[in-house]
Length: 435
Image (cartoon, rainbow, N blue to C red; front, side, top):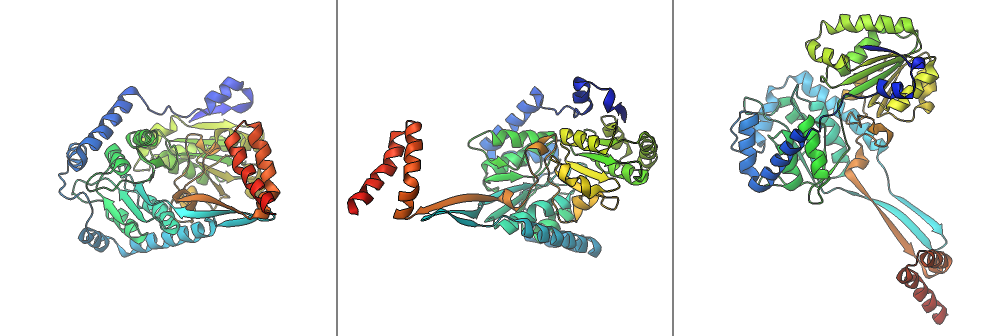
């Protein structure tokens, strides 16, 4: 990990210190994804089968997972894993139900009622990757809020394995959270299928979920096409920033850094601390723990893009964090909650030594589908609201129109929109004539 002394850097140096690994949107990637999307739109199911045979080396007859396959997957899973999936889904449901937006109705003037009503997005598409490892937790994080929102149809795509099956735990989690249909599809072709529809895969209104560079590029392309589909958020590689003081436990801090570094070679982890001694101890501990990891080589690649940042004090550490806007922020200081009000940009925050980021990944109840790559400055993680449309409603009585109509007429005249003004003044005149 690169060592940085924040106070010695000028503005350009600080920008460079907090730079993410370059996301790959090379011309080759863009054109490759464009070709896949065009092929799926043109060839439908036949193209999906062809691409699955090419990339996953599996010949599929049925693209959809059958009820028998769901039952077989459940039968193969260990009881303790099924119990853990149900337990995690229950806590995610508890939190997301409590945090879900509600309807609003308020009188903004006598006789003028303005409301907000909530409507579920009709059909949503969830993507659960399975490249480095299957992610049943992502099926939970996406399936639960979709069910709470009341989406009419929830579709899920996840890559097929060499044995011709999808991961058993992903299938069980999908079924447990109320997903309606699952397809054995991965990569950019899965995104294209859900965005535009084929004979087997229904066209979806909005797409959710993480993925590799091809999946991310496909999501961006279909979101930019009026005939495509909306997406949950822009996304990049996984990341964590840890703020720690001199009293933090180096073993815990190192474990938290490695828990994100093992995601992939383009992940990034940062430790920001006013204690040079802590930075030294954590650096040593990271190497000691990494050597024992099954994904040690992957973590090593990520650590090459990572930082140990020495700051003057804890408040400056918070400033650095807000500037970076991490996907995950872990605070291991003497009084972590006292810093929360100063945190302005983070996807999800973890307070104190007993709150590893892994809890949020799996079972605390929050959501792990979060904005990365600095998008936490302007985006939020997935929630029930992500699966809903908020529709405003207004209703005015005659008295209400008399009360606020003149305001609307003056503003319309200022904007030189005469038809807007007359839509109000004609009604006001009719009320005056009837009086």
